[in-house]
Each structure stands twice: as C-alpha cells, then as structure tokens.
Amino acid sequence: MFQLDSAPLRPTSVWLRGLELGWLAFGRLFGLAALFGLIGLLPTFYIAGRLGDTTLTRDSLLQLLRAPHFVMNFLLLELLVLVCGSFVNALIIRRVERTASRAAAARDLRFVTGKLPALILAGILATLTLLIGMLIAAVVGGILGALATSALGRAAAVGIAQICVLAAMLFIMVNLMFFPFAIVLDSKGPVAALNHSSALVWRNWWRTFLVLLITVAAVAVCAAVVMLLLSLPLASWWHTLADADTGRSLLIKGVLRLVATAVFMPFIIAILYVLYRDLRLRHTPPVAPTASLQA
Image (cartoon, rainbow, N blue to C red):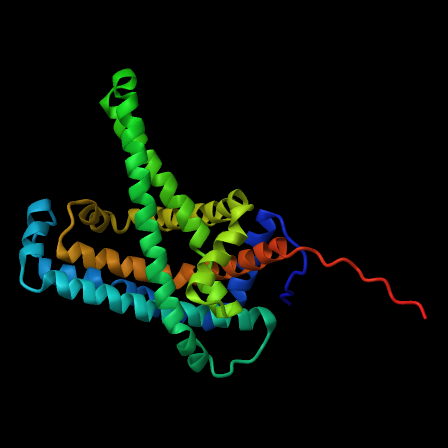
C-alpha cells in the first residue's frame, strides 16, 4: 500500500515512488491523459487539415501564414488548448493527490473549475517569463559570440548563442514547472504559485533536474524499445514517417504522440507530485521541539 513520505528522499527514491504512485493511479488517469493529449493536438490537426498532402516546407508554411484568418484561428486554438489543457492537467493532479492520500473523490470538477482562472493566468505569465528570459539569453549569447568570433570562428559564436538560449530555457522551465501543483494543492494565486515554484527549486535545481532527466531517459528508452519491436513488421510505414512531413504524416505522428501521452503522463505527473512533496519538505524548516512547561 502506498504511503506518503514525511522525510526528504534521494532522487532515485523519488522516481521509484512516483512510478509506484503512477501505477496505482493509472486506471483513474488514463482517460484524462488521453484527453489531455488530444487537446494538445488540436493545433496540429488544424495545420494538417490545411496542409493536406502538400509537403511541409518553408514556402508552404509561409503560404499558410498568408491565408485569411489562419493566424487568428491558430491563436484561438492555442488559447483553447491553454484553457482546456490547464483544466484537465489540474484534474489529473487532483486525482493523483487523492490516490496518494487514499481519499474519496468529492466535487473534483467544481474544485478544479475554481482553480482555472489562476491556472490560466499563471500559464500566461510563465510563458511570458520564458520568452523574456530566452530573449535576454539570446542577447547575452550574441554579445559573447561576437567577442569570441575572432578567436573561435563564426560557427562557435553561433553555438555559444544557442547554448545560452538553451540553458536559460531549461533553467526557467525547471524553476516554474511546479506552479500547477502550487495552485491545485496549496491554493496559491498565480504570481504566488510561480514564486513558490521558484523558491522550492532554487536550492535544489540539480536534484530536480536529475529526477526529470531520469524520467525523460526512461521514456526515451521505452519509446526506442517499442520502435525497435515495430521496425521490422512496419518498416515501410516507419520509412514514410522519416520523410518530409505532410498533412497525413503530421496526423499519424499526432496519433502516436496521443498514445504516448495516454500511457506515460500518469507516471510523469505522479513523479512530479512526489518530487513536489519532496521539495516542499526540504523547503520547510524543521520545527524545533518545544520543552514542556514545568509547574
């Protein structure tokens, strides 16, 4: 039986406990995870429908961007993905918590609906923070690259700029990734949730990154094994997917991503839940025992 931990864990223990919780909650979360994956594919389906069997190139993409109402429809779809995806993700977090605490479901839809405005606003703020951080990193990387051009060459200068942007993106994403948990589990506001996530990760960034790296590596290994097993009977089909993208191949890849999301997301959210609790335990200072008063 799953027991919530009252003391911080090692990174591998966090990951194993998350797997255990994900397995217990898998039946409750599979349908929601599939719905989350389907919501995230709406923009892809829209592009695939407009693209048809045309090969996706820079020229065909520019032609789509020039089409009437394409950009507006795409942005509206992205807004729909943000709203609906935030709702489903919060519902998954809520059910993971109920599985971990062995609590019965009670008014989860009403509870998550009340958290939705904070989730949407926090998601917008997190996206803006990420874009601003990457822009600043691009400027800094460009300056460093310009200084290193004469000594290392133009290719090295471009590489330095790219490394700066990638490092900034990873740093900000890891720092802000727990804001949905702070809103759903701790009833934080949008700004407070972002600050809380950053405060939890700040002194444990590498520990957090290690757990995430193990998770990504495990998913990649599982996907590679599945692709290897299917490579012989479906060799011609995989070959078509390796070619230049068309609307048809985008749909096929979208379906594959949908299946992967439905299978892996329950475990990923469960690992993040255990990691969030671990970071919260590390962030909370220990309470000193109070001596009893003598009469």
